[in-house]
Amino acid sequence: MAWYWIVLIVLGGILLLCGLYLVLATIVAKGTLKAATTPVKHTLEEARKFQTEYEGMDYDDYDTQWRKQSFEVDGVQGKIRGEIIFNDAASQQTKVAVLCHGHTWNRINSLKYARIFYAAGYNVVIYDHAYFGLSDGTHTTLGFNESKDLRSVINYVRTVFGNAFLVLHGESMGAVTVLCELSLRNDINAVIADCAFSNTVKYFRQLCLQATHLPSFPIVDISNCMSKRKYGYDFAVVNPIDDVKNSDVPICFIHGLSDKLIRAEHSEEMYKASRNPLSELHLIPHGGHARSYHVDNAGYAKIVTDFLEKVNCEQSNQKQSDKER
Image (tube, rainbow, N blue to C red; front, side, top):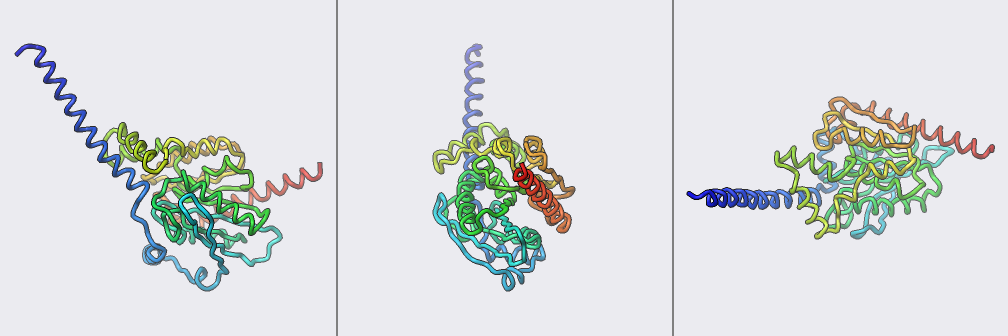
């Protein structure tokens, strides 16, 4: 057989393999995008049942003791719905915490954190991201549109509570959401970011390799092209670490060292990028993804309350110092 036939056969085989891999990559990319933007989601009732049965949650305070008021604001995909939990405890300073839940869940998943803030004298705001819970929406975007919706929620909260001490808490996708809002406004006093990723493309590449054992190129790139065309959602735009770099807000990063979905290195990178000396990093041994609270409820609550007390005290002292000048 002539040498050029051998070359043609080899080249043809390579092209066939490349074509087959491209087909496989496209199939995986479609699945990746579906899992990210239109995942299986839980109703409020399902969230309550799950947390009651598997996490020992009790809802007596939420159901019968707390004074609540429902609200809705305009979001990117329609109405964003939630509740304000008013704290009637006497306090000289009005304090508010806005809580953002994670992927696939809803506002009910925020209640375990709501208790921490309520006990510390905060009014608490919980709400459903677009697509989840009782809010409108046909898909989710892992922080891209969610940060815009959060902006609407915060604007509404300001009309209710005025110049209150405002704290944001987010878990997973919720943590990405609150971090993405940092560089866009200057009325946030502190942030608690639990298991956020620092860069969307990096996160998807790591997850793709881990889940499929296939090279992330071109799978993630194809998935992003599909996302931009279908939803206008560009993975490359959502990079919380850039917002952290451009913000002076003190941030408490919390991440489980056993988190296999979003590696703890993401929070470590963002902590190093934070400009505020009050920022903290807490790596929780044996904590899986969004499970740091469950490893040690009391320890988690202490991390949050100690951080907020430090920030509040420092900012109050700074205001007093400014007045005396």
